[in-house]
Image 1 (cartoon, rainbow, N blue to C red):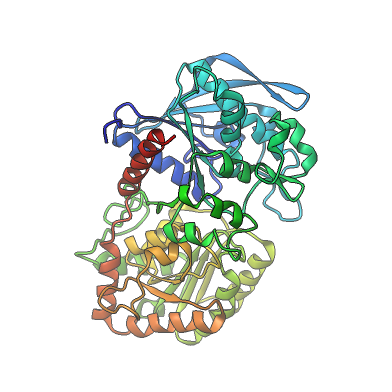
Image 2: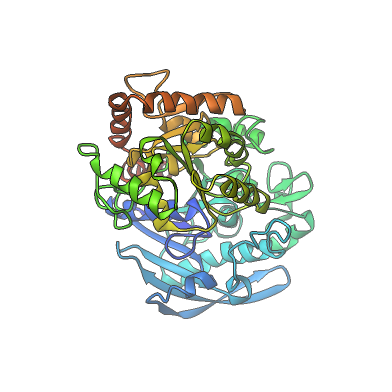
Amino acid sequence: MAMSGNLKVLMCASEVAPFAKTGGLADVVGALSKHLRKLGCDVRVVLPMYRQTKSLQLKLEALPHKIFVPVGIHHYTGYLWKTTTGDGVEVYLIEKDEFFDRSFLYGNPDPERGDYEDNAERFIFFCRAVFSLCLHIDWTPNIFHIHDWQASLVAPYLQYHWRNTDEFSTARCLLTIHNLAFQGIFPGSYYGITHLPDHFFNMEGMEYWGQCNFLKAGIVCSEFITTVSPSYAKQIQTPEYGHGLDGVLRNRSDRLLGILNGIDYDTWDPANDPFTVAPFDSINLSGKKLCKKHLLKELNLTPDLLDHPLCAIIGRMTYQKGYDLVHAIAPTIFDHGAGLVVLGTGIPEIMKLFRSLQQKYPDRCAAVFEFDESLAHRIEAGADIFLMPSRFEPCGLNQMYSLRYGTVPVVYATGGLDDTVVDAVEYPDKGTGFKFYKYDVDNFWEAIRNAFDVYAQPEKWQKIQIRGMEQDFSWSRSALKYMELYEQIIKTD
Protein backbone atom coordinates (compact mmCIF):
# COMPACT_ATOMS: atom_id res chain seq x y z
CA MET A 1 0.00 0.00 0.00
CA ALA A 2 2.02 2.87 -1.30
CA MET A 3 0.31 5.75 0.50
CA SER A 4 -0.19 4.35 3.99
CA GLY A 5 2.57 6.44 5.58
CA ASN A 6 1.00 9.71 4.33
CA LEU A 7 -2.65 8.70 4.47
CA LYS A 8 -4.69 11.13 6.59
CA VAL A 9 -8.07 10.04 7.96
CA LEU A 10 -10.45 11.97 10.22
CA MET A 11 -12.90 9.80 12.15
CA CYS A 12 -16.11 11.79 12.67
CA ALA A 13 -18.47 10.16 15.15
CA SER A 14 -20.99 11.10 17.81
CA GLU A 15 -19.42 8.73 20.34
CA VAL A 16 -15.97 7.22 20.74
CA ALA A 17 -14.69 5.01 23.55
CA PRO A 18 -13.53 5.89 26.14
CA PHE A 19 -14.65 9.52 25.77
CA ALA A 20 -18.39 8.97 25.30
CA LYS A 21 -20.35 5.78 24.85
CA THR A 22 -23.87 4.41 24.59
CA GLY A 23 -23.12 1.27 22.57
CA GLY A 24 -20.97 -0.58 20.07
CA LEU A 25 -20.38 2.43 17.80
CA ALA A 26 -18.06 3.96 20.40
CA ASP A 27 -16.06 0.75 20.79
CA VAL A 28 -15.70 0.33 17.03
CA VAL A 29 -14.45 3.86 16.33
CA GLY A 30 -12.04 3.77 19.27
CA ALA A 31 -10.56 0.38 18.41
CA LEU A 32 -10.41 0.96 14.63
CA SER A 33 -8.56 4.25 15.11
CA LYS A 34 -5.97 2.60 17.34
CA HIS A 35 -5.27 -0.18 14.84
CA LEU A 36 -5.17 2.15 11.84
CA ARG A 37 -2.46 4.13 13.61
CA LYS A 38 -0.51 0.91 14.12
CA LEU A 39 -0.59 0.47 10.34
CA GLY A 40 1.01 3.87 9.82
CA CYS A 41 -2.12 5.89 9.11
CA ASP A 42 -2.29 9.50 10.36
CA VAL A 43 -5.74 8.96 11.87
CA ARG A 44 -7.40 11.53 14.09
CA VAL A 45 -10.79 11.56 15.78
CA VAL A 46 -13.40 14.25 16.35
CA LEU A 47 -16.52 14.06 18.54
CA PRO A 48 -18.64 16.41 20.65
CA MET A 49 -17.61 17.36 24.19
CA TYR A 50 -20.38 15.86 26.31
CA ARG A 51 -21.00 16.13 30.04
CA GLN A 52 -20.06 12.43 30.15
CA THR A 53 -16.69 13.34 28.63
CA LYS A 54 -16.04 16.17 31.07
CA SER A 55 -16.65 13.84 34.01
CA LEU A 56 -13.63 11.74 32.96
CA GLN A 57 -11.23 14.53 34.00
CA LEU A 58 -9.05 14.03 30.96
CA LYS A 59 -5.81 15.85 30.33
CA LEU A 60 -7.05 18.36 27.76
CA GLU A 61 -5.37 21.11 25.78
CA ALA A 62 -7.54 24.11 24.91
CA LEU A 63 -6.93 25.16 21.30
CA PRO A 64 -6.57 28.92 20.84
CA HIS A 65 -9.51 29.27 18.51
CA LYS A 66 -13.22 29.85 18.69
CA ILE A 67 -15.38 28.49 15.89
CA PHE A 68 -18.49 30.18 14.53
CA VAL A 69 -21.10 27.87 13.05
CA PRO A 70 -24.37 28.94 11.38
CA VAL A 71 -27.42 26.76 12.04
CA GLY A 72 -30.57 28.28 10.59
CA ILE A 73 -30.80 31.94 11.61
CA HIS A 74 -28.41 31.42 14.53
CA HIS A 75 -24.64 31.74 14.64
CA TYR A 76 -23.23 29.60 17.41
CA THR A 77 -19.83 29.88 19.04
CA GLY A 78 -17.94 26.71 19.87
CA TYR A 79 -14.63 25.81 21.44
CA LEU A 80 -11.99 23.22 20.54
CA TRP A 81 -10.07 20.86 22.78
CA LYS A 82 -7.41 18.28 22.09
CA THR A 83 -6.16 15.18 23.85
CA THR A 84 -4.18 12.08 22.90
CA THR A 85 -5.04 8.46 23.68
CA GLY A 86 -2.56 6.09 25.30
CA ASP A 87 -2.06 4.63 21.82
CA GLY A 88 -1.06 7.98 20.37
CA VAL A 89 -4.28 8.86 18.49
CA GLU A 90 -5.04 12.60 18.50
CA VAL A 91 -8.63 13.30 19.57
CA TYR A 92 -10.46 16.60 19.11
CA LEU A 93 -13.52 17.56 21.12
CA ILE A 94 -15.99 20.21 19.99
CA GLU A 95 -17.50 22.06 22.93
CA LYS A 96 -20.88 23.72 22.80
CA ASP A 97 -22.53 23.33 26.19
CA GLU A 98 -25.92 24.46 24.96
CA PHE A 99 -26.00 21.35 22.77
CA PHE A 100 -23.85 18.76 24.49
CA ASP A 101 -23.64 19.43 28.24
CA ARG A 102 -26.55 17.10 29.02
CA SER A 103 -27.23 13.96 31.04
CA PHE A 104 -27.52 11.76 27.95
CA LEU A 105 -25.98 11.78 24.48
CA TYR A 106 -29.09 11.63 22.30
CA GLY A 107 -32.07 11.73 24.64
CA ASN A 108 -33.61 10.15 27.69
CA PRO A 109 -33.48 6.33 27.53
CA ASP A 110 -37.07 6.21 28.78
CA PRO A 111 -39.07 5.62 25.55
CA GLU A 112 -41.87 7.89 26.80
CA ARG A 113 -39.46 10.85 26.97
CA GLY A 114 -37.46 9.98 23.87
CA ASP A 115 -34.81 11.82 21.87
CA TYR A 116 -33.89 15.45 22.39
CA GLU A 117 -36.09 17.72 20.27
CA ASP A 118 -33.10 19.68 18.97
CA ASN A 119 -31.04 16.70 17.78
CA ALA A 120 -31.14 18.05 14.22
CA GLU A 121 -29.58 21.35 15.30
CA ARG A 122 -27.08 19.60 17.56
CA PHE A 123 -25.62 17.42 14.82
CA ILE A 124 -25.85 20.02 12.06
CA PHE A 125 -23.63 22.10 14.34
CA PHE A 126 -21.26 19.17 14.85
CA CYS A 127 -20.97 18.31 11.14
CA ARG A 128 -20.31 21.92 10.12
CA ALA A 129 -17.85 22.40 13.00
CA VAL A 130 -15.70 19.54 11.64
CA PHE A 131 -14.55 21.73 8.75
CA SER A 132 -13.80 24.68 11.04
CA LEU A 133 -11.66 22.35 13.14
CA CYS A 134 -9.61 21.25 10.12
CA LEU A 135 -8.99 24.85 9.09
CA HIS A 136 -7.92 25.90 12.58
CA ILE A 137 -5.44 23.06 13.04
CA ASP A 138 -4.25 23.41 9.43
CA TRP A 139 -4.77 19.72 8.70
CA THR A 140 -6.96 18.35 5.95
CA PRO A 141 -7.70 14.62 5.73
CA ASN A 142 -7.66 12.56 2.56
CA ILE A 143 -10.69 10.75 3.95
CA PHE A 144 -13.49 11.93 6.21
CA HIS A 145 -14.61 8.61 7.70
CA ILE A 146 -18.10 9.42 8.98
CA HIS A 147 -20.20 7.15 11.16
CA ASP A 148 -24.01 6.82 11.26
CA TRP A 149 -26.59 9.57 10.84
CA GLN A 150 -25.13 11.94 13.41
CA ALA A 151 -22.03 12.53 11.24
CA SER A 152 -23.65 11.96 7.84
CA LEU A 153 -24.06 15.63 6.90
CA VAL A 154 -20.30 15.96 6.66
CA ALA A 155 -20.66 14.39 3.19
CA PRO A 156 -23.10 16.92 1.65
CA TYR A 157 -21.28 19.81 3.34
CA LEU A 158 -18.07 18.62 1.71
CA GLN A 159 -19.79 18.26 -1.65
CA TYR A 160 -21.74 21.53 -1.68
CA HIS A 161 -19.78 23.90 0.57
CA TRP A 162 -16.13 22.85 0.54
CA ARG A 163 -15.33 20.76 -2.55
CA ASN A 164 -14.17 23.73 -4.60
CA THR A 165 -11.85 25.14 -1.95
CA ASP A 166 -8.09 24.66 -2.02
CA GLU A 167 -8.12 22.99 1.40
CA PHE A 168 -10.70 20.30 0.68
CA SER A 169 -10.64 19.81 -3.09
CA THR A 170 -9.10 16.33 -2.85
CA ALA A 171 -10.88 15.16 0.33
CA ARG A 172 -13.35 12.28 0.08
CA CYS A 173 -16.01 10.76 2.35
CA LEU A 174 -16.52 7.18 3.51
CA LEU A 175 -19.74 6.51 5.42
CA THR A 176 -20.03 3.51 7.74
CA ILE A 177 -23.56 2.42 8.65
CA HIS A 178 -23.55 0.69 12.02
CA ASN A 179 -27.33 0.25 12.25
CA LEU A 180 -29.65 1.27 9.42
CA ALA A 181 -32.63 1.39 11.78
CA PHE A 182 -31.41 4.76 13.07
CA GLN A 183 -31.48 7.35 10.27
CA GLY A 184 -31.89 10.81 11.79
CA ILE A 185 -35.30 11.67 10.32
CA PHE A 186 -36.70 15.14 11.00
CA PRO A 187 -39.57 17.28 9.63
CA GLY A 188 -39.07 18.71 6.16
CA SER A 189 -39.36 22.20 7.62
CA TYR A 190 -35.93 21.66 9.21
CA TYR A 191 -34.20 21.61 5.82
CA GLY A 192 -33.71 25.38 5.82
CA ILE A 193 -31.50 25.28 8.90
CA THR A 194 -28.99 23.02 7.13
CA HIS A 195 -27.98 25.78 4.67
CA LEU A 196 -27.68 23.10 1.98
CA PRO A 197 -28.82 24.07 -1.55
CA ASP A 198 -32.54 23.92 -2.30
CA HIS A 199 -32.10 21.38 -5.12
CA PHE A 200 -30.63 18.81 -2.69
CA PHE A 201 -34.02 18.45 -1.00
CA ASN A 202 -35.44 15.98 -3.52
CA MET A 203 -35.83 12.22 -4.03
CA GLU A 204 -32.23 11.87 -5.17
CA GLY A 205 -30.97 13.88 -2.20
CA MET A 206 -31.91 14.37 1.43
CA GLU A 207 -35.69 14.31 1.07
CA TYR A 208 -37.48 11.22 2.40
CA TRP A 209 -41.29 11.21 2.13
CA GLY A 210 -41.32 14.95 2.71
CA GLN A 211 -38.91 14.71 5.63
CA CYS A 212 -35.18 15.28 6.12
CA ASN A 213 -33.18 12.07 6.34
CA PHE A 214 -29.62 12.73 7.52
CA LEU A 215 -28.37 9.18 6.85
CA LYS A 216 -29.77 9.23 3.31
CA ALA A 217 -27.86 12.46 2.67
CA GLY A 218 -24.66 10.71 3.72
CA ILE A 219 -25.40 7.68 1.56
CA VAL A 220 -25.95 9.65 -1.64
CA CYS A 221 -23.01 12.05 -1.12
CA SER A 222 -20.28 9.73 0.13
CA GLU A 223 -17.79 8.22 -2.31
CA PHE A 224 -18.18 4.83 -0.64
CA ILE A 225 -20.43 3.21 1.98
CA THR A 226 -19.53 0.37 4.30
CA THR A 227 -21.52 -1.66 6.76
CA VAL A 228 -20.15 -3.69 9.64
CA SER A 229 -20.52 -7.18 8.14
CA PRO A 230 -20.73 -8.67 4.63
CA SER A 231 -24.15 -10.27 5.22
CA TYR A 232 -25.64 -7.03 6.54
CA ALA A 233 -24.40 -5.21 3.42
CA LYS A 234 -26.54 -7.58 1.35
CA GLN A 235 -29.53 -7.59 3.69
CA ILE A 236 -29.96 -3.81 3.81
CA GLN A 237 -30.54 -3.82 0.05
CA THR A 238 -33.78 -5.79 0.61
CA PRO A 239 -37.18 -4.42 1.71
CA GLU A 240 -37.14 -6.64 4.82
CA TYR A 241 -33.98 -5.07 6.28
CA GLY A 242 -33.68 -1.83 4.30
CA HIS A 243 -35.86 0.33 6.58
CA GLY A 244 -37.12 2.25 3.58
CA LEU A 245 -33.66 2.92 2.12
CA ASP A 246 -33.14 -0.37 0.29
CA GLY A 247 -33.71 1.26 -3.10
CA VAL A 248 -31.24 4.05 -2.34
CA LEU A 249 -28.66 1.47 -1.27
CA ARG A 250 -29.26 -0.72 -4.33
CA ASN A 251 -28.54 2.34 -6.48
CA ARG A 252 -25.14 2.55 -4.77
CA SER A 253 -24.45 -1.19 -4.68
CA ASP A 254 -21.23 -0.74 -6.68
CA ARG A 255 -19.92 1.46 -3.84
CA LEU A 256 -21.29 -0.58 -0.92
CA LEU A 257 -19.10 -3.03 0.99
CA GLY A 258 -19.36 -5.02 4.22
CA ILE A 259 -16.25 -5.10 6.43
CA LEU A 260 -16.66 -7.17 9.55
CA ASN A 261 -16.00 -5.35 12.82
CA GLY A 262 -13.20 -6.69 14.92
CA ILE A 263 -12.83 -7.00 18.66
CA ASP A 264 -10.00 -5.65 20.77
CA TYR A 265 -8.01 -8.66 21.93
CA ASP A 266 -6.04 -6.41 24.29
CA THR A 267 -9.27 -5.83 26.22
CA TRP A 268 -11.02 -9.17 25.65
CA ASP A 269 -8.43 -11.80 26.47
CA PRO A 270 -9.30 -14.65 28.87
CA ALA A 271 -5.62 -15.37 29.40
CA ASN A 272 -5.05 -11.86 30.75
CA ASP A 273 -8.34 -10.40 31.95
CA PRO A 274 -8.12 -8.23 35.09
CA PHE A 275 -11.86 -8.66 35.76
CA THR A 276 -11.82 -12.47 36.13
CA VAL A 277 -10.57 -14.76 38.88
CA ALA A 278 -8.60 -17.24 36.77
CA PRO A 279 -6.88 -17.11 33.37
CA PHE A 280 -7.49 -19.66 30.63
CA ASP A 281 -6.90 -20.17 26.93
CA SER A 282 -7.54 -22.69 24.16
CA ILE A 283 -4.68 -24.88 25.38
CA ASN A 284 -5.74 -24.96 29.04
CA LEU A 285 -9.44 -24.40 29.77
CA SER A 286 -9.32 -25.33 33.44
CA GLY A 287 -9.57 -21.70 34.56
CA LYS A 288 -12.97 -21.36 32.90
CA LYS A 289 -14.57 -23.71 35.44
CA LEU A 290 -13.15 -21.60 38.26
CA CYS A 291 -14.62 -18.50 36.61
CA LYS A 292 -18.01 -20.24 36.42
CA LYS A 293 -17.85 -21.26 40.09
CA HIS A 294 -17.04 -17.68 41.10
CA LEU A 295 -19.82 -16.24 38.91
CA LEU A 296 -22.44 -18.56 40.42
CA LYS A 297 -21.40 -17.43 43.89
CA GLU A 298 -21.32 -13.74 42.92
CA LEU A 299 -24.87 -13.90 41.51
CA ASN A 300 -26.27 -16.15 44.27
CA LEU A 301 -27.13 -18.98 41.91
CA THR A 302 -27.25 -22.62 42.97
CA PRO A 303 -23.85 -24.35 42.90
CA ASP A 304 -25.61 -27.29 41.22
CA LEU A 305 -25.29 -25.29 37.99
CA LEU A 306 -21.55 -26.00 37.99
CA ASP A 307 -22.41 -29.30 36.30
CA HIS A 308 -25.23 -27.96 34.10
CA PRO A 309 -25.30 -25.40 31.26
CA LEU A 310 -25.25 -21.76 32.30
CA CYS A 311 -26.73 -19.54 29.58
CA ALA A 312 -26.19 -15.80 29.35
CA ILE A 313 -27.35 -12.74 27.43
CA ILE A 314 -25.79 -9.29 27.62
CA GLY A 315 -26.89 -6.10 25.89
CA ARG A 316 -29.58 -3.51 25.36
CA MET A 317 -32.91 -4.91 26.50
CA THR A 318 -34.92 -4.31 23.34
CA TYR A 319 -37.14 -6.42 21.11
CA GLN A 320 -34.52 -6.17 18.33
CA LYS A 321 -32.15 -8.17 20.55
CA GLY A 322 -34.70 -10.97 21.01
CA TYR A 323 -35.25 -10.63 24.75
CA ASP A 324 -38.89 -11.66 24.25
CA LEU A 325 -37.70 -15.00 22.83
CA VAL A 326 -35.30 -15.48 25.74
CA HIS A 327 -38.06 -14.76 28.25
CA ALA A 328 -40.46 -17.15 26.53
CA ILE A 329 -37.91 -19.97 26.49
CA ALA A 330 -36.50 -19.42 30.01
CA PRO A 331 -38.86 -21.79 31.89
CA THR A 332 -37.91 -24.59 29.48
CA ILE A 333 -34.22 -23.84 30.09
CA PHE A 334 -34.81 -24.15 33.84
CA ASP A 335 -36.82 -27.35 33.42
CA HIS A 336 -33.73 -28.89 31.80
CA GLY A 337 -31.60 -28.08 34.85
CA ALA A 338 -29.82 -25.11 33.26
CA GLY A 339 -29.44 -21.52 34.44
CA LEU A 340 -29.70 -18.04 32.95
CA VAL A 341 -27.78 -14.78 33.53
CA VAL A 342 -29.05 -11.49 32.10
CA LEU A 343 -27.14 -8.19 32.07
CA GLY A 344 -28.41 -4.97 30.52
CA THR A 345 -30.82 -2.08 30.61
CA GLY A 346 -33.50 -0.94 28.22
CA ILE A 347 -37.24 -1.02 27.72
CA PRO A 348 -38.92 -0.95 31.17
CA GLU A 349 -41.52 -3.60 30.32
CA ILE A 350 -38.78 -6.06 29.26
CA MET A 351 -36.86 -5.36 32.45
CA LYS A 352 -40.05 -6.01 34.42
CA LEU A 353 -40.45 -9.42 32.75
CA PHE A 354 -36.97 -10.52 33.76
CA ARG A 355 -37.34 -9.10 37.24
CA SER A 356 -40.39 -11.34 37.70
CA LEU A 357 -38.51 -14.28 36.22
CA GLN A 358 -35.69 -13.82 38.71
CA GLN A 359 -38.17 -13.69 41.59
CA LYS A 360 -39.80 -16.91 40.43
CA TYR A 361 -36.51 -18.78 39.86
CA PRO A 362 -34.04 -17.10 42.25
CA ASP A 363 -31.56 -19.99 42.29
CA ARG A 364 -31.43 -20.40 38.50
CA CYS A 365 -31.95 -16.89 37.10
CA ALA A 366 -29.91 -13.76 37.81
CA ALA A 367 -30.85 -10.44 36.18
CA VAL A 368 -28.69 -7.34 36.63
CA PHE A 369 -30.21 -4.14 35.23
CA GLU A 370 -27.22 -1.86 34.73
CA PHE A 371 -24.20 -1.40 32.51
CA ASP A 372 -21.31 -3.12 34.29
CA GLU A 373 -18.26 -3.67 32.10
CA SER A 374 -16.40 -5.79 34.65
CA LEU A 375 -19.41 -8.06 35.23
CA ALA A 376 -19.78 -8.45 31.46
CA HIS A 377 -16.24 -9.87 31.37
CA ARG A 378 -16.98 -12.26 34.25
CA ILE A 379 -20.18 -13.45 32.59
CA GLU A 380 -18.36 -14.12 29.31
CA ALA A 381 -15.69 -16.04 31.23
CA GLY A 382 -18.07 -18.02 33.47
CA ALA A 383 -21.04 -18.83 31.23
CA ASP A 384 -21.19 -21.93 29.02
CA ILE A 385 -23.63 -20.72 26.35
CA PHE A 386 -24.27 -17.21 25.04
CA LEU A 387 -27.76 -16.48 23.68
CA MET A 388 -28.02 -13.91 20.88
CA PRO A 389 -31.39 -14.27 19.11
CA SER A 390 -31.35 -10.80 17.51
CA ARG A 391 -34.05 -10.18 14.91
CA PHE A 392 -31.37 -8.34 12.93
CA GLU A 393 -27.77 -7.68 13.85
CA PRO A 394 -25.52 -5.52 11.65
CA CYS A 395 -22.42 -7.11 13.17
CA GLY A 396 -22.64 -7.88 16.86
CA LEU A 397 -19.68 -7.98 19.22
CA ASN A 398 -20.85 -10.20 22.06
CA GLN A 399 -20.86 -13.36 19.95
CA MET A 400 -17.20 -12.67 19.11
CA TYR A 401 -16.35 -12.00 22.75
CA SER A 402 -18.09 -15.27 23.59
CA LEU A 403 -16.13 -17.25 21.02
CA ARG A 404 -12.93 -15.79 22.44
CA TYR A 405 -13.93 -16.90 25.96
CA GLY A 406 -15.03 -20.43 25.05
CA THR A 407 -18.68 -19.52 25.66
CA VAL A 408 -20.50 -21.22 22.81
CA PRO A 409 -22.98 -18.87 21.05
CA VAL A 410 -26.53 -19.74 20.02
CA VAL A 411 -27.58 -17.17 17.40
CA TYR A 412 -30.20 -16.32 14.82
CA ALA A 413 -28.61 -16.59 11.37
CA THR A 414 -28.70 -12.91 10.43
CA GLY A 415 -26.14 -10.23 9.57
CA GLY A 416 -22.86 -10.44 11.42
CA LEU A 417 -24.10 -13.36 13.54
CA ASP A 418 -24.37 -15.46 10.41
CA ASP A 419 -20.90 -14.32 9.27
CA THR A 420 -19.08 -15.09 12.52
CA VAL A 421 -20.65 -18.32 13.83
CA VAL A 422 -20.37 -21.71 12.10
CA ASP A 423 -23.26 -24.05 12.93
CA ALA A 424 -22.01 -27.20 14.67
CA VAL A 425 -25.04 -29.20 13.55
CA GLU A 426 -24.52 -28.44 9.86
CA TYR A 427 -20.71 -28.60 10.08
CA PRO A 428 -19.77 -30.95 12.95
CA ASP A 429 -16.03 -30.74 12.27
CA LYS A 430 -15.93 -26.95 11.83
CA GLY A 431 -18.74 -25.70 14.07
CA THR A 432 -18.17 -22.92 16.60
CA GLY A 433 -21.76 -22.47 17.78
CA PHE A 434 -25.42 -23.18 17.02
CA LYS A 435 -27.81 -21.34 14.68
CA PHE A 436 -31.52 -21.20 14.06
CA TYR A 437 -32.92 -20.07 10.73
CA LYS A 438 -36.61 -19.36 11.34
CA TYR A 439 -37.38 -16.67 13.89
CA ASP A 440 -39.68 -18.24 16.46
CA VAL A 441 -39.60 -19.83 19.90
CA ASP A 442 -39.65 -23.42 18.64
CA ASN A 443 -36.61 -23.01 16.39
CA PHE A 444 -34.76 -21.05 19.05
CA TRP A 445 -35.38 -23.84 21.55
CA GLU A 446 -34.22 -26.48 19.06
CA ALA A 447 -30.87 -24.68 18.70
CA ILE A 448 -30.49 -24.42 22.50
CA ARG A 449 -31.43 -28.08 22.91
CA ASN A 450 -28.79 -29.01 20.33
CA ALA A 451 -26.26 -27.09 22.41
CA PHE A 452 -27.43 -28.84 25.60
CA ASP A 453 -27.06 -32.25 23.90
CA VAL A 454 -23.45 -31.55 22.94
CA TYR A 455 -22.69 -29.99 26.34
CA ALA A 456 -23.47 -33.45 27.79
CA GLN A 457 -20.57 -34.81 25.67
CA PRO A 458 -17.53 -33.04 27.22
CA GLU A 459 -14.95 -34.00 24.60
CA LYS A 460 -17.14 -32.88 21.72
CA TRP A 461 -18.10 -29.69 23.57
CA GLN A 462 -14.50 -28.77 24.24
CA LYS A 463 -13.61 -29.12 20.56
CA ILE A 464 -16.32 -26.56 19.72
CA GLN A 465 -14.99 -24.24 22.43
CA ILE A 466 -11.41 -24.50 21.19
CA ARG A 467 -12.37 -23.88 17.55
CA GLY A 468 -14.21 -20.73 18.64
CA MET A 469 -11.33 -19.51 20.76
CA GLU A 470 -8.89 -19.91 17.87
CA GLN A 471 -10.90 -17.76 15.44
CA ASP A 472 -9.29 -14.48 14.36
CA PHE A 473 -11.66 -11.55 14.75
CA SER A 474 -8.91 -9.09 15.60
CA TRP A 475 -9.15 -5.43 14.60
CA SER A 476 -5.77 -5.65 12.88
CA ARG A 477 -7.33 -7.67 10.07
CA SER A 478 -10.34 -5.35 9.73
CA ALA A 479 -8.16 -2.23 9.89
CA LEU A 480 -6.04 -3.51 7.00
CA LYS A 481 -9.19 -3.84 4.86
CA TYR A 482 -10.12 -0.25 5.68
CA MET A 483 -6.65 0.94 4.72
CA GLU A 484 -7.01 -0.79 1.36
CA LEU A 485 -10.42 0.80 0.87
CA TYR A 486 -9.17 4.29 1.76
CA GLU A 487 -6.51 4.05 -0.90
CA GLN A 488 -9.04 2.73 -3.42
CA ILE A 489 -11.30 5.72 -2.72
CA ILE A 490 -8.44 8.18 -3.17
CA LYS A 491 -7.65 6.69 -6.60
CA THR A 492 -11.31 6.67 -7.69
CA ASP A 493 -12.81 9.70 -9.40
